[in-house]
Length: 527
Image (tube, rainbow, N blue to C red; front, side, top):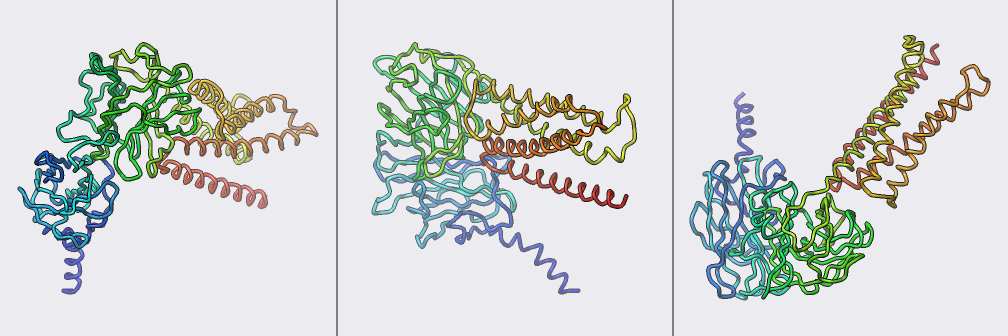
């Protein structure tokens, strides 16, 4: 009995023992992940890592602050300095205020800082100094924060900091003294486009924001601001219409080195845009803090679209705003895109509203899911498996027939509405696998009721021709509809988890149909 009690005590105490309240967490130096039996949080961390250079001399010391709200303090942390995209720590730390201790990571003395106790903390300040050889030009501070055993965040980053005392023309980083991007001036001094409407990027980390301010003499050009949460990039483009193609685009995204860079691109059709030279772009400032990308820069470039190739402040354009993932600095298909409801000029100081068309494509997807993953299969199951077991009459017809006709008619109507929404969203025909499959589904959907209206009587000697045609078209329609839904889902679901859920639902539906078919054949053989 004592051994069992001791085993229970050890089992209960094991998680606490792995929390390392003393801060001796050198084994987590590489991935900065606490050795807890839980996954890191994927939401935006309530903690920040801020930096402030102690002096103006190149290579000087840097003051690093870890801060958290008093309502939700952190109990543990791990802080390192790395080159953007690097895998090992650089420089060394000196302790400041707060319960902290120095660690040896990657066989470098004092290259990391951790907590010295499990007491609640809202502010930790330390000092970092570069290595004596001064081979590192830029540095970024990364931290992990622990609130409880199962609640912790990994990879909370500071803005990228230049150590050479100056900012390069094309890759300067946001310095601590720079003005943060906000919606101050929107509607009065600068043109703004944000989602959700009127959100403030300086307050909300879920605000997608773009602004343009036409500079006045003696300055010239347009001052752009771009901000938003993103795993890869956020971008805006000037366009002659409300859809992608022939657009002048600026991209704020992660580079292959792990930093943030501004790119200029031009799109042709709905293909990936082609990166161009930045041209006359200057005063670039970028940051990536807590998963929020920000870029500010001045452009004197002409706006190139299908109808424009000059710098004209009075020319009217639509504005496009998009965000999505990237791989090694190469942008992938956007997760979501917004377009302005009307054309605007660079001289405008309006707050632009989205045209709301993204709701149309969402409605299209929802209606097709309802039609061919719910109602369509229900109508088919009723017709095939309940017609022999139900003798109930309604309106002089068998109940199963009334249900089948009602459900499938509703499915036809929903399919037509979804098709109209897709065409209205795109403004015309679109090339690709999904549109072709969608047209095939609509065609077969219209053929089925027409064929049913032309069917002969049940006792007619050629009735079997209708039965077989109706069955083959129904099976083909169901298979094409599933393929269409999957291709559409993959276009919208960059994370992939919705596609997996849909795959699980489709597998469950297929298993149910197989079991019902086996039962029907067994009962038929028994009769």
